[in-house]
Length: 403
Image (tube, rainbow, N blue to C red; front, side):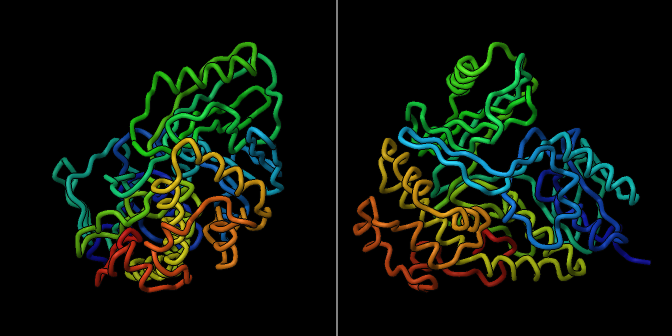
């Protein structure tokens, strides 16, 4: 009999560990799993969206049950043009996420503990606030964002509403930047979840993390007033996410594998967490518990050059483009980049040629000479460049943030 209580303990029941749980059920259905979540539901109060190219081969079977709405394309809107990008876009709600993860775990007899708080997390065990100690062959800590420095911020406030009449748009509007620009790059994000149900988010790419709740709420309500006769609020969600240009703090040595935002498993330049969280879930679930760390670090090293480039984009955007000029940068990108390049960028699978086109365009619209002189070579694998901005590798990183 195993000396461990479980094969896996997943600390936190958000997107990252929920995806790991579903991947384990798909690839290793006989393992013993414990999920510890501090609140009363898995997934919190969030909405996650992704593109078709974000889904690695073999993960479709356990991702499809999570999807509540999908569309064949999405729109972006700027003051001087509107574009429909022909790339499938899909959305997962927290309610559906909670239902699927809970049903999956219950069907396999897993230990699903809601409203359970953790006092201490170690490499092979967890101590609860009740003083109960649980052990596992693999512990993965994915308890959400941690403190950030050297970064800009993506912040948002959204309302999901029921309308008195059908919403006029049938496609998601990933960026509606036709609104006045303030506090950085400012746009609305719209998901038509059903004919009379829509999520509208007031979103900013800003220098500071402060979210003016009252003003953001007023902007969402004003946007709805212009588009709908009457509405009823179903729920509200908000958040502040880091958009880093340098790695954050490194987890303590000999600690557990750190997943999710706290571990840096997200796209630095977009804030999208789904694509990389799903890749980590597949990597961890494809091997035995003792090999999960090595599989995660192999994935981290494969993603490393692209993460560096995404951080470079953040550094240029927040350090060298004034807040009122950032809309022009995104306008150029969406006006000029082909759908395939956009898809690879969102999925963090872009090529060196894609990176050059994203950065410089045809022709470049902003003067990058000054920051590039300071930054160093633009070679995709320039060790001088990576060390200058990101520091040296620690000997034993426990998360992608250590890279």
